[in-house]
Length: 83
Image 1 (cartoon, rainbow, N blue to C red):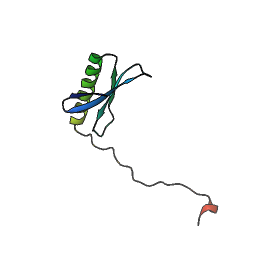
Image 2: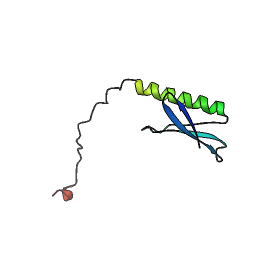
Image 3: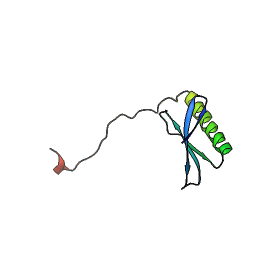
Image 4: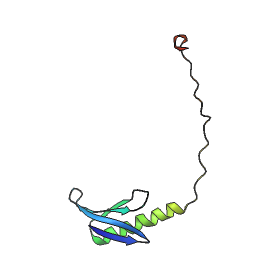
């Protein structure tokens, strides 16, 4: 298994016979980040692009959470179901 590093992130690379290309997975992070390429150059470029995108997304301020619902569900039951 081959590894790559970029900006402090490490990826493990394997060759996939099924996909007929190199497939990489970024390791030791909470997210699932995968990428692929047919050549070493394509693989390196894809890895750097996903890491840059991951960092960009992580740096964005969190949006305010959506307005919460009341938490009640009103429904009518037939008389026979009343206790």
